[in-house]
Image (cartoon, rainbow, N blue to C red):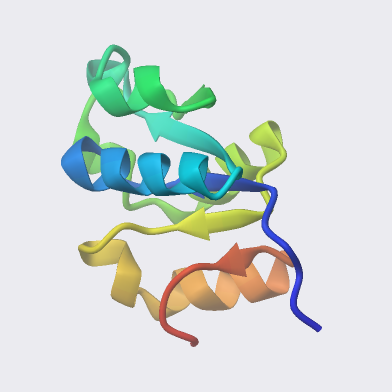
Length: 110
């Protein structure tokens, strides 16, 4: 059974996140940006329907941590995660975790 996506968390930043947000809006899917402290006023944070801070002062301590991504999904009520097109998109651990958490992973299957 395929579940419809109603709200998507974008686990990325910058232009990649903007493109995903715009596509989600065109598809009538609510978007959530997660952000580190240094990205709080970034265009993708401002364009998304919602934004969730992941409480870290540096990007290297935030965007790659699976527990923070899953927590941001839970806080926002997102039912899907789009990892972007860099490090997380090929992260088998994130894909497996999404399955175990009943979240849709928009990327390669584990």
